[in-house]
Image 1: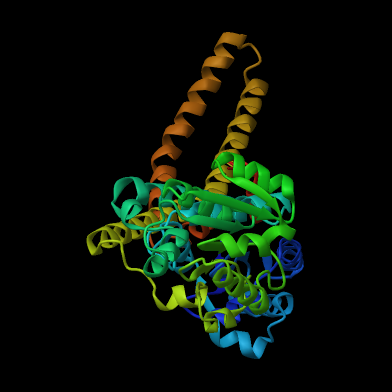
Image 2: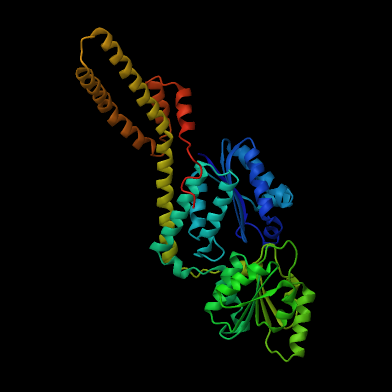
Length: 442
C-alpha cells in the first residue's frame, strides 16, 4: 500500500475557501467514484468535516496521484485549481499515516483534543465501504486510526482537556449570554452537530430548548431526546425573537438566517421589551448565517471563521506531547506490520513450492517402493514434511522480521531470486489475499 492524502483544512486555507470547497453528500459520492475511476488510484476515502476536506487514496504513482486528486477536488468543489492549489497539503506513505493518526487523536482539530472527529472518521470509512471505494488497504488504515484515536483519549488527559467545537463556540458567546441556565435556545438543524449542540445546551440547563428542522419528524426525535420542543422550519423567524441563543448547523446550500431575518428579529425583540443581544453560533459549512449579521446592533455572531482565529489550546502541553508519542509509536508499528505483510505472499509461495516438491518426491518413492504399506507411507511422508518445515521455519520467520524494518522491502525480492519463485504465482497469492474489504467494518 502506498497511501496518499491530498487535502485542505483550517490550518492551510481561510474559511472562505473551505466554505466554497464544501461538498454535499451526493457530491462526495461522485468525487469518490471519479477517484476510483482514475488510473493511479486503487482505493479512496473522503474525510469531509466543517473544517477539513481530505482525500485518502491507495495509489500506484505519487505524482500522478497528486495531480489526479488535486484536479478532482477542484472539479467537484467548483474552486478553480489555480486558486485551490496554494492551500492544498500532500502527505505520502508514513507521513500520510502519521497525519491520519494525528487527525484521529484530535491533534489537528480546530479545538485540540475534541473527540467528535472519531465519529466523522467512521462515517468517512462507512461511505467508502458503501460505495466500494475503500478496499482492504484503506479499511485497515482507518480501522487502525480509530483504535489509535480511542487509545489517545483513554490513556491521556486530552479527552478531558479537549472541547467539542460546540462547547468552544458557546464559550466564545459566554460574554454575551452569560450563564446558560434558564436561557431560551433555538437549534436550527437536526444532524450530528445540531444534536451535539442540543445535548450540550440541555446539560447546561437552558430553560426552553427549541429544535427547528425542514423535516419536522427529525426535529421531533431530537427534541424528545433532550426534553425540548420541535417546531416547523417556517416558525424559525418567530422563535428567533424569543431566543437568547441560536445555534445553526444545517446542510443547506444557501443562507438559512439572512441579515434581514436577524435584523427583523432583533427589532421585534426591542419592541417586545426583551433585553440582551441575540447570540448566534453558526457551525455550518457552508455557512448558515449571513456574515453581515455581526454588523447588526443587538446581535452577536460567532462562526467558524471567528473560531479559527480564536483557536483553543485548552489541552495541556503534557497531554499533547504524550499523544504525539503515542502517534509516533503507532505509526512505526503500523509501518512495520505493513512492510512485513508485503512479504507474506512470497513466503506462502515458497512454502507452496516446497509442498509441491515434497509431494513429487513422495509420489516417486511410491513408485520405487511399491511394497510399503499405508502406515509406512504416512510415516515417511510426515517425516519429510517435518524436515522441510523445520528447514524453512527459521528463515521465513526471520525474513518477516527483517522485512518489517525500514528498508526491508528488498527481502521479498531476495527470496524470489534465491528460490527461483514464479512471480506470477506470488502475484496470484497477493490478489487472493485481499479478502473482504469490509472486514472489521465499524
